Length: 247
Image 1 (cartoon, rainbow, N blue to C red):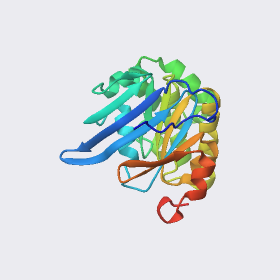
Image 2: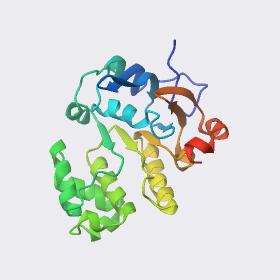
Image 3: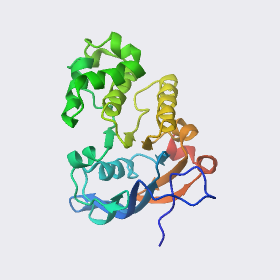
Image 4: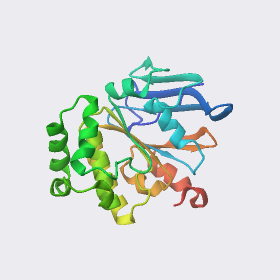
């Protein structure tokens, strides 16, 4: 069975090799399997929206892609190379960066100290700060402020800054909208769209589909650990059931 093609805006031209690909991937926690043969592709410069209700398998799929959850069957590939078993640190060095659900900033550290934490990837603090403050000037004015005292949107800017400062090739976003006001969610996804326009390849797991679909190049619907439909965002949007995707 051929994996569905996900992650390109055009279906007529010959497709390039996927940058990231899951082929028949199975995975679980202990004896409980939660992914049952997931097929997914992310092409260079694409934004793939991974949609579905809580418990559908979105976060587990991102954990596979970040090296946190091991593959039990099938293949996880980067640029055509199987990377099953490669740990999270090694995948980060290969250009995969994750912003987890809940943003993952250190509330008791300042903005500058949060950026310093990201120097473990080998990027200098001054370079991380330049990326952060150039893109989000508000962070420059709050560099000595505790991250936990900032708004949810500002914390999300900080999380994005830590990721972007490492010059990733693939950005994985898990529930970017969580805990944010609708206006801030729109602003955050506008930023994600800008990053994609600059050439970053992005996989976004999102429960609230209509937050991400306007900037997605393609979408995949995952239910009960299986990708059940993939396609153009507009087509997926027309078929979404607001009863389980939150509209």
